[in-house]
Amino acid sequence: MASLLIHGSEEVSLTLRGPEENRILVTVRRWPYWNQVRVERDPLDATRCLAVTLTTSRLNESTLREILRRSFGLSFPPGGGDSEILAAPREPGVRRRR
Image (cartoon, rainbow, N blue to C red; front, side, top):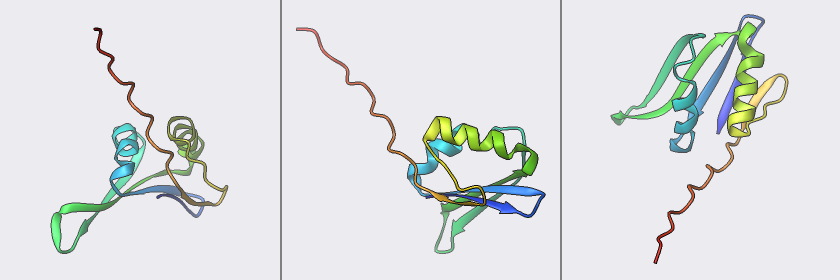
């Protein structure tokens, strides 16, 4: 489940948890407007990532929301909150000619 959190009038953050949200992270990780990135690791296994939180200015909120809506079907309430990612589109099968 992805979470969009509003931090006053200055910042907005996107928290991604779980392997199903890796495709979101792959898409937005190189977005140049992130001010801060926090990685939460499993205390019992430091190689395992539990969550990634990306923070940007509120000035970029509408662009971020639009990217998440168009690319992943994620829609958040105006004040922020949680949203479930839609299932990944299925890869078209390769058909063999006989």
